[in-house]
Amino acid sequence: MKGKILTYDSERKMFQLEADVYEGGGGQPADRIRVAGPQFSIESRTTVKSKEDGNVFWVIEKQEGDVVKGDVDVFIDELWRLEVSQQHTAQHIFSALAEDLYGWPSEGFSIFDDDSKIELLGADDDMTKYEQLEKRVNEVIAERIPVHIYEGDGTEHLRKPTKVLHPRIVDIEGIDKCACGGTHVQNTADIGGFALLKVERKNTRYVRVIFASGLRLGRIAKKYVTKEQQLKNILSGDIKERIQQILDQKRQLEYDKKNLLEMIKQYISESSQVRWQNLPLDMQSMKQIASYCGEIEKNIVLINEEGYFAIAGPDSDTYFQELREQGANGGGKGVITGKIPLSNG
Ligand SMILES: [Zn+2]
View 1: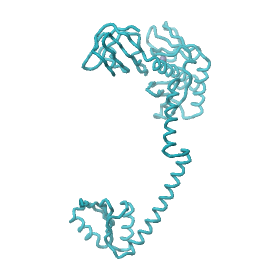
View 2: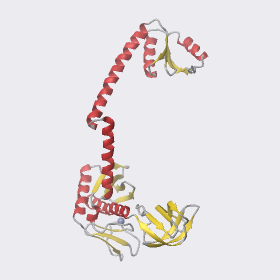
View 3: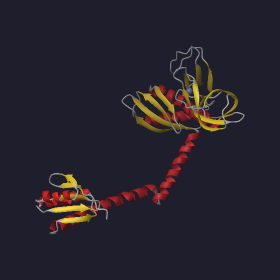
View 4: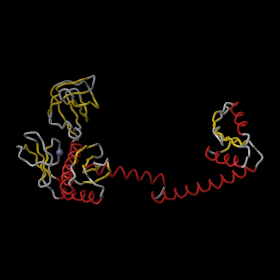
């Protein structure tokens, strides 16, 4: 396709382009384009709209050579254009059906790189309704319904009212009629398929629906199959079974730890030794043992490998003072806890 670079801002890495490309808007991202001049090539996939005059600027993502204003060749990433058109057309069908079947108007709509979002006003949490909607959208896809685009004369009954005198109308025969400036497929069959990925309540008024259609369904499937294979490799075996085994092992280890701690507690509390150092215990376990010693009026000073300590017993303040003189800090009632700096060998 032929086009023209109208302006080029080398500092901000942006340019204005005159060509038959989609510049984004209405929840739909821009085309992904490559622009080639005699001595240069640039790639862009995002646009920004000037707040002052509404001019659209393409943001340069990749550049080779020095950009010169004037005539250029423009190449569109056709697969991305199709993918976005599939999402957009699916959204028309879904929104029309949600309104017809359940009286839920669509408000927020956005197409992202991997999925799309629709916000339904007044929607409820009955999942069977969403399953029904998903099925109906796929039926409309299978019915091969043509999508017409034409200029309206203001007499059409549209799903959403518009103030534009001659709106660009997207008409999916018998399903939806809506003013829209985005890109769409020519026949519902071109959407390929539709899946609701997530239904979540946004607030008391809105339910947010995440969906995907067409080309990206394959990409999503591939991503999860790869992920599952990686998990299988890490866990070496059936994922569900292995996770259950690991959870069982964890439960057993927790039980063993509890019993061992009980043994250590008995051993320490019955010993005449007061100071215990380099213990392979965490703070919680030391506190538990110290607290028990405190209850039976036994002096105890427990210090673990990292220098954390727990002190209890009738003379705990004296023992704490000794540690403070070695640079420890901490405090507490009943059981005194804190940390002592470890000598660097
Ligand atoms: Zn549209």
